[in-house]
Image (cartoon, rainbow, N blue to C red; front, side, top):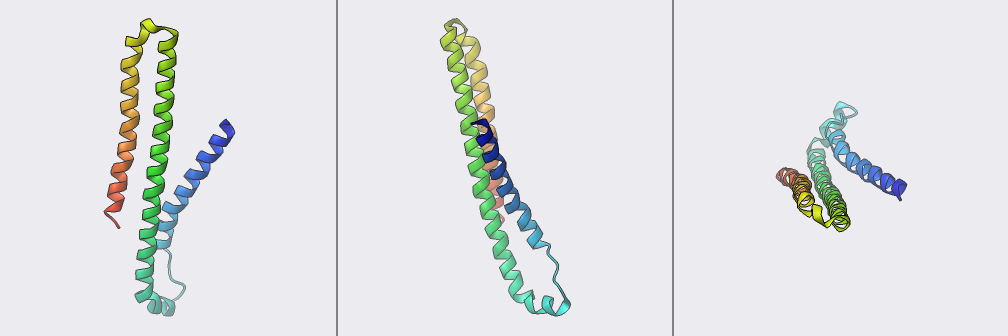
Length: 125
């Protein structure tokens, strides 16, 4: 199971990196010659801008999806571990509860941070 999760995470991050860095490479691609640059200047700028907006939209979608998935997995594991600890030793529930809530808040702050980044990218569309 761990190998599948690791392969899935690496492939999702690779797709995200291709979307982000591919859009940067397309934006900075030089023209082959001056005649081609002159003819494609009018149509190429609009197509390149549309392509950039498409990649930014994909980056927003993938970024939010990865952040929500990772945050949910982290919160689920933290809550399960805390509840298991409380079930094994009910007297330690006060000592376990506060760090668990702090950990859940920090995990959620990372997801909210990715939401903020997506709003900033959305402003570029």
